[in-house]
Amino acid sequence: MASEHINIPYDELTELCESGDLNAVARLLEELHPTDIATALDGLKIDDSEILEIFRLLPNEVSAETLLEMEGELRELLVDSVSHVELGELVEGMETDDVADLVGEMDADDARKVLAGMDFEESEAIRELLKYPDDTAGGKMQAELIAVSADATVSNTLIDIREKGKEVDHFTSVFAVDVEGRLVGTVPLDRLILADADTVIKDITDIEATRVTVDVDQEEVAKMFRRYDLLSMPVVDLDDRVVGRITIDDVVDVIEDEIFEDFFRVASLNVEERSMDSALRSFKLRAPWLLINVLTAFASASVVKIFQGTIETMVILAVFMPVVAGLGGNAATQAITVMVRGLALGEMNHLEHTRRLLAKEALVGLSNGLLVGVLAAFISYLFGASLMIGFLLFLAMTANLVIAGVCGSFIPLLLKWLGVDPALSSSVFVTACTDIGGFFTFLGLATVFLKAGLL
Image 1: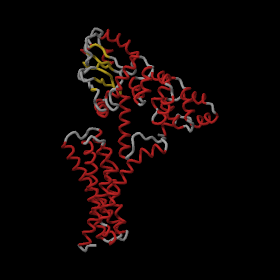
Image 2: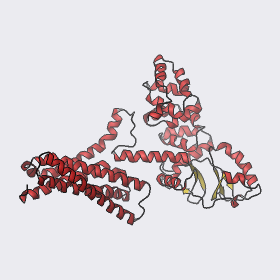
Image 3: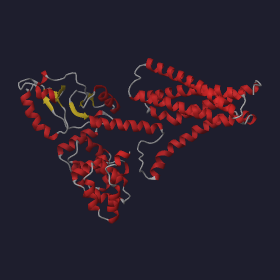
Image 4: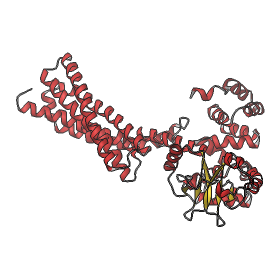
């Protein structure tokens, strides 16, 4: 995060805000990149009304790009506070996918008012994009593209591109289509420029070029970009007609969103939470998972209660219980992280891969369990425990790390098969398994040892 703040003169901005010279603040911010402007406005300790006034003082082009870089409550504040006329002016220069994202966050009445104030053709394009779920190729695509006739010559196509290209930013290829608008393939710009003027487009078209339908999940789209090193990709409807394109900048955003989503899920956090959110908002977003955690914690406590008599007989067992559970939880987190990454990258496409991974995690758990079990037994001896207590700790540690490996890899798979985000399997569900398994193994073996007279 430190690199984000290198170019932001917070001290000077704060001084200008305290003096009330918001015009000077806007002029200073105008020199920054829109990403840095959004970060600065989010970090300045000023009233919402002052943020809104500074935002309005920025040139339209700058404020539009800044709005796209904002997140969370700050973006909601500005969208809710700016009039529909002002918002309509801001979105005029945006790409259709960005406008669709912005309009999609508004309530129905506000969205209609903003769309009504836009150019008819552009508003229709936005409405088409809003039909698709946000996490699909259709929801991520932009309507701006260059489609050319597959039967045209290169010379005529270049004339066509010079006209159409004025409305399309950052294109590296054009899409060749037939008379009904169905995709024939893609033509990279370098191949088009180097071709002879009288060459027919379909002769230099890559008909095997990767394409994606509007209903494909955004994660799969990101995998395709990574697998084939793409810069852009055509999006087609179910009749194979070109309806949009996805560019690498959109995919970078998807990858970032997916990474942070998995990161948040593993920590049992809501993906909507931001560091600068109010305490009340953070409380509302975190509390549900903590309440679930209370239930799983009491499930673990119920196992301990079953062996209450054993603990009363040998109080020293209570000293080592957290060691068994804690090591199991850490080992499970390792297995979960590897599994969630593998699922995200599509590495487990066959049942044989799944079996191999489960077997591997069980073996890793056994190996680590033997290793840390020996160390734990030795340290328990230094704590004054008997050799049998150390042996008991060794057995329980080994068993619980096997449980951690199996549960940490199987539960994400199970949730994936059930259509649930596998990252949700993290600290709540798998830790409950390792706590219950660890306590049951440790205290259960202790009970057996006591009855056998070994303790």
